[in-house]
Image (tube, rainbow, N blue to C red; front, side, top):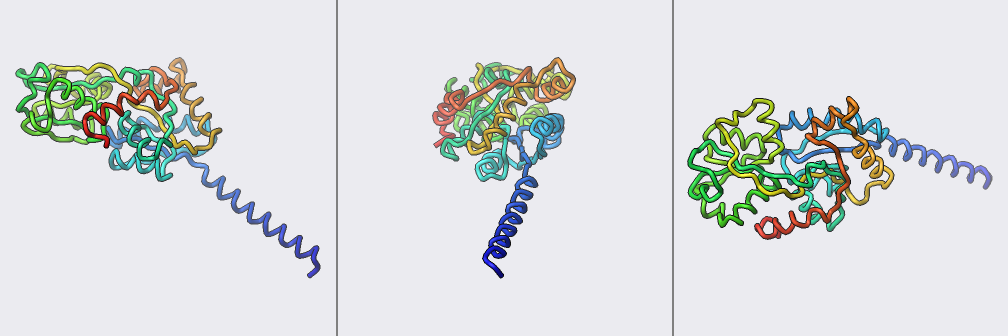
Length: 288
């Protein structure tokens, strides 16, 4: 074989290899999305479906929602490149950012997340303030939940109530709707959950506020956001951000998505917004 023929053969091989790799790259153009399991998996899937369809059109790539078993799995999935974007609570964002060495970027949050709140609920007539929880059975949501554990614990400690020593027993329901069920069913005397889920359950008649009532609402704090890794393709990251910011309640599609996300609109966010959450976690001994 002549030198020219050998050179041509090499070019053909290289071109074939590049074609294969390009094909693989195109085949892998999938945005893998998940969310902390603060509600039932079926509810999370229902809420995400219209948003996923919308993002597919905006990004021109497939969008897959993969539920995770617990909060820790959402953190590990993003850090270990098994997921590309995750709906985090403020505390899980802080955990992910800490675990990754500052390589997690919060893209957007609902406008409501700039002043999010937790509610404390009970069926007992004897519980009307936080100090009444002494000696009672109480449930948080998930251990890694911002609105179901971290901030309720923070405000309990501020009221001089240590859940671990001042209450008869504490439990972790695993999700906000499960907390309501535990309180309504008399399994515990009281519990804490995020105000958004509480309002949704009341408006959908899944809880009777005449029987289960709110006796304390926390001050506002920054909470949920959509986060990605810092190494995400900048163009994809920008398209994602633009897609969320373009959601408009005046359009049928935008209204459906925003209503399901319990949002008036999405706004940009940044890591610095969660410094108070990080401080609260360290003060409560939940972040070493």
